[in-house]
Image (cartoon, rainbow, N blue to C red; front, side, top):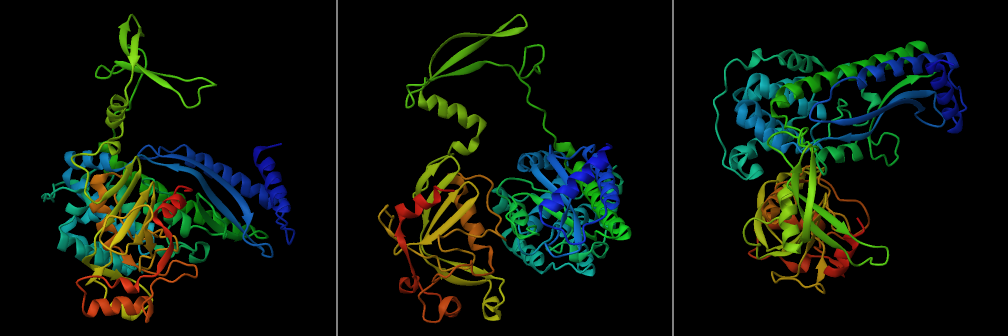
Length: 533
């Protein structure tokens, strides 16, 4: 049996198992579909993806609903990974300042808002336009997006805010450097890819096939980024909890012409993806790092050689005991030799791990408001303060006070891996494990205090030096919607809107604690709930 006929039989069996017995497509159509998809998939998998992407793609056919004649080509990417982008872009910025700055600006203005306001299409178009026209013609990029029906109001808001706070000082933690655009950038080899990317139009894609109403781009830069939430929230096309990126191209399974039309849309998707890859390759290709190699002395690069080794000792009957020894590595003829070792101390191991994972080490003194610090975890309290509050909601009265300075309550923040939690405290004193917590009176915060980070551009590492960045990201993000569930956000008699409208008219020197609703749990219980995740 030919490969495409075998795939057709599997697809037919799959549809039958799903109970989709109504007007099953003819086997000839399934055979042609399987053959075309197999050919397209093999062509796609032969490409070289940028930035060390690891992408496993599966194409299949499936019904859109139980009682529907509509089938769909499903692009299923179960393994999309990419290395952290900060270091490659910093190296790129050092070598090609203008290109590096364009990438930073596009990522900040676009990626920071992808969860609610900016489509992947807008992000890549912004990146291309920043590169092509230069920062001095940024308005041209926004006008181009407006002409194609893109909503760029939030991007413009971030742009204005950047001017006020001197982007990217607060993002990168370093002074802004102004560069003059270098000449001849339009003549770089990947200029054609930039032109190709800019040539695609939104009206070429069927809006009915994608709930997210945006161009499908498989691009997840780092764990915990907003793009992960885009995959979770916007690409959940069949109302199931997918953990992977999926796209649908619908067609009538009884019609060859309908299938060919869907296949044409899928081909357009591949063409756009190829253009995106070419642009990213061109922009970031100069920042590729040298691969790490460990082998025999003959195989290792001259600047890298094994010098020490760690051996871990444990036994079946000593579950709570272990020993680590450190051994010097001697270079022998064509091999390495371990010399006698000595027991490793905890400080020595911590120092060693800090060299490979800088987030483990804290630079300088611990902040006074830091309550707990572990790898990937931060717990700290933030005294009451007056800061602007931003809204982007369906309530015009809240949108009218967006950007006004208000008094915020004493807050408690907890960061674990990719999750951010916030609660309110009754006073500015250092809390204990038995302190009763109050609800943080904000939208985008659920009953347990977990924050929906849709428009938040938080730091990439959880370390004590990141506390200020987390606070700025929280206070400068736009609160958009109540976070589901039946719980009381505030005890103010006029509710959430009344609380912040009152604060905007005349900010208090101290936040009115009487308007905070109890969370009905202690700090210890709150932290134990987070450990489940």
